[in-house]
Image (cartoon, rainbow, N blue to C red; front, top):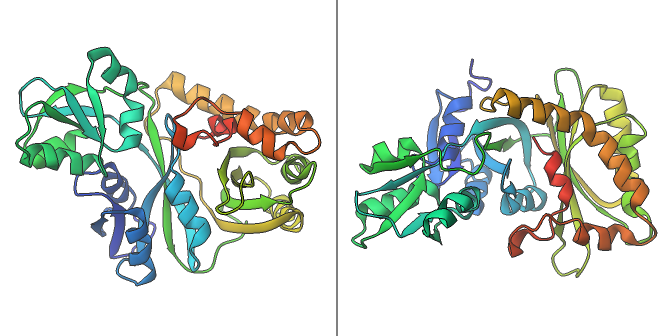
Amino acid sequence: MDPHPSWARVGYQGEPGAYSEEAAIAVLPKATTIGFPTFTRAFDALASREVDAAVLPVENSLGGIVQEVNDLLWERSGVRVSGEVIHPVRHCLLGRGEPVVRALSHPQALLQCRKFLEARGIQPVSFHDTAGAARAVAEGMVMGNGAIASAAAAKRYGLKILAEGIQDDDTNQTRFAIVDRGTVAKPGPGLTKASLAFIGAHRPGSLVHALTCFSDRGINLTRLDSRPVPNQPWQYRFYVDFEISDPQAASDALKALEEEATEFKLFGSYPAAESRSASSAGARRARRRRRTCANRSRALASRLSSGCARARSRSLTLGRPASQRRTARWATCSM
């Protein structure tokens, strides 16, 4: 059942056939989907009422945080996260038939298929969108170009599927936020998850105190990422998702965090989505991660000593690409 029957136009980033469009159709099957070349343009369309909502990726189970979308949620006013959808991602290598030596795709998709590409000596080439890469290969004249995109994109642009399921992990999923205009919902009945961001005071123990706002109330964090604050070297903004099992405890935690932080923004409270693609083993691993994430946040707090908020967020890196090396390792708690 369509949860938002009044939404007639829904935006996404990319071209027809993109995974973002698939996610938008999955959650809002009756809406007209409208693609935009950039995330910024999608947010602009939402603000100008060109669309009623936008379905935008916030994190991937392999690639981690989608930096630009998270930063735009912080920067833009008048928008909120009112829902989420977890969409399975099954990448295919598409081409016109000749051997592929270069694969065009979105940087996240290239990262998610790194092992496949390296094993075959295929050069990754960044493109603005998976479906756009498929279109470029279909229309281009350069021999040896292929695209990493969906089977739907192959059908739409008349390409051959040269290999299926080439992602490094069969449980590969992307979590999309449903973003619309309106008043941000606070924790309440039927709302089982919340997303926010904050900047802590630049003093010893500030991250410890922020995390205890949740752990002291038995609240489970499902995501904790960090991003550099522009024009403030070595200062970080933290992005948090958490489960709402007790609305009053969640409200108290938000109040305590708002008092502790120098800057704070609640993106929204909403019904949590269920994974639709993980294998049974992958689903069990995801459940174990959710059960232990609160304990991990306590362990992180106990290890952080005076003045560590800055240093620790840099040292707990997973070895991601340079553009993502400041993302804290607690992103592995993500669903």
